[in-house]
Image: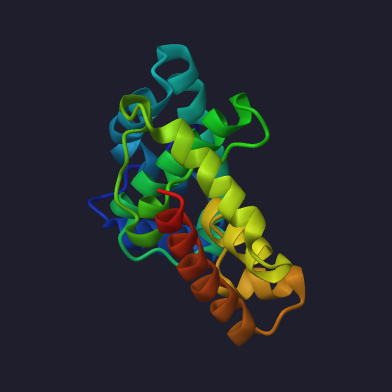
Length: 187
């Protein structure tokens, strides 16, 4: 971990603003230190391994350095929780076969926490979800994956794909609707 200055009671938003202004890593470290316990808890919940969880905390800290420069964050604690959860889900996904996807339609729709290790039907749901994603047209597939899995914003997706910003929003919205219909039909 980086050594950090005392934050003198600064709010999360102030620390983020300071970091974005001067790119001083001490501000990120001071901010991250406030929530290291929460991040470790999230990692342990999903990864179920202490050593892997410790490694994930460090990886999340490293990713945070870049992400805070590119994402507008208004409620840091909640954003960091989702950021950590998604990092863990991506690690779990990497361990599984390429045909499975570590995100459920419920998470995609409302961002609520799921308990993948406790849900015995999750593997079947993931397989169904992946098949449904493969059934989307190419534009919807690409935008849905970038938005939900890579956590890219509309603007970044538009730049990466060359699609117009309004088309990106439409592809994501229609893709999500089509996934929901497909999942309901396959239940």
